[in-house]
Image (cartoon, rainbow over all chains, first blue to last red; front, side, top):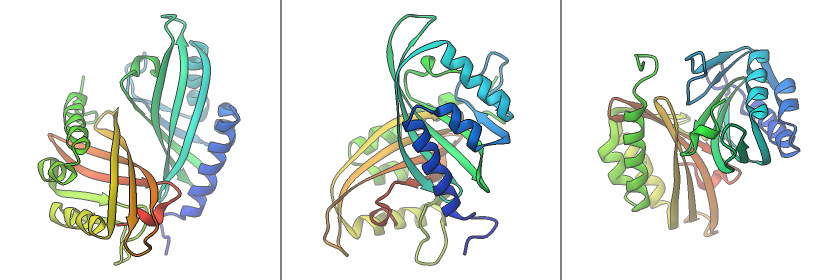
Length: 137
Length: 137
């Protein structure tokens, strides 16, 4: 029943549950290293300093996240999900952070949508709520 | 700055805020009538009785939602959002429903992702959490 158009949702569920498990343990970077495809595309709601919304490639995407983590004091992180749709899944992230640039602590929520191809994540997309400034990577 | 590839996010925000406003007033069907494009595509995580995951066309999509509403006693509905990403936005829906087929009340949460083209919604996609049975339309 699951053909090229609608890939095996069990694969999606396996990858989704693994990402949630690792993020619940605050091992977000381990999740990226283990699950992200070499050619992953990351899409953000706010343009990067170079004017682009997309970042391509596992190393570049991990570097982007590392840059964000380094620019913030992260007091807590929580993940809820996964929510499944065929070859994609979404999660809700909640962070309590203090951007080092402002020193002002904020609670931010975002929705992430991941695309799974085979046993790897090939796309991550971040939808921002109102406090987008503290989420831009 | 916003070209063909990255449509005007202000249009996305306007449509998103209007959908949330109407759904907060429990006017979900008014939201569909006002904002859905004639050729809207709806994608569900569980196949429809005809085996398809997609429903095409405003009338067919509204009928599908009406079928779901008719098959459930809806005790409450809540919407959170919007969360924005370029020409798309997402929301979190929470429903307390009793499927008439089971008589068993459940709390269900789903994430919806909408695509905006011009001032209309051209795609709706529903990501299900664990209680998918009560969400399948």
